Length: 339
Image 1 (spheres, rainbow, N blue to C red):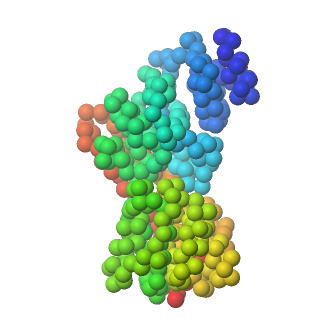
Image 2 (cartoon, helix red, strand yellow):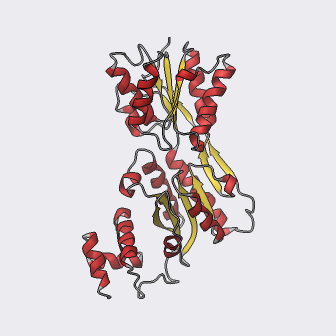
Image 3 (cartoon, one colour):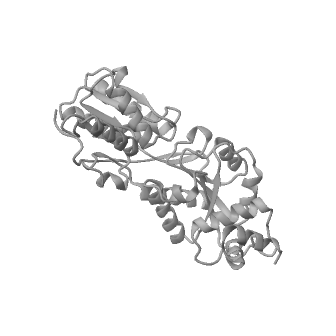
């Protein structure tokens, strides 16, 4: 073993045998440990000849995620379920999961090359944070690719997404049926295609209900919207107007809005109804429990793997990329009431 293996092990606080297992693809290691070892090995320039990928390796699929502190990303209330679906579906089909994180400003294609070898048969892109330069580099290499929870059809990439527009339209229509007329919208940047679709669904529901948009009732947060951004946007709206309901384009935004409403000594839903989107686990733990749009996250991962395997096995058959749009579901709880 090269002396460098001990340097990698020391920096990762693991044993040298653990480092070897990562490169052999053996052992019941956590994905967090795997990705940490691979990143440190790359930093130190460690690439053992003995354990370079062999033909005997199990065929694998590369899951590419944005570098948002992977352990937090994998355990997030949304993507944890998607990854579970991916892992189960790959295991059922005899594929090994490999992980690659990329920063949002990735321009160094050497990292991509270091993760690709003859065992990698396809690529899954998770979410909107994987930079387009990385996506196009994968595409140029001729690998089958499926994007999950972000529509990349414009770049010729097969995509598995939710029906964001219809889900948003249905939950705003539900608010209208409850008697609400002044319905505010808080969502992420329209540069995020998921958020753009949800805003379009909001507008469509208002239009079909015979209502006009009110500029003071609309706020946009960052590309990856957070609870704090939701709080700030709700505070800004309520400082100027008082809508009877708020449609938040993510559950995190909705919970941020509920926090501000409580701080203003107002009640949800007595004074203002609040609804969200995604149905993350925390929606049942807040008070009142959040009415929202359920996204079938594990199924999204399973569908993506199923389609990727079809692409791997029948490359010549699927020449035109497609978008698989999964239905959403209204989940009615306690945070919305009749006006």
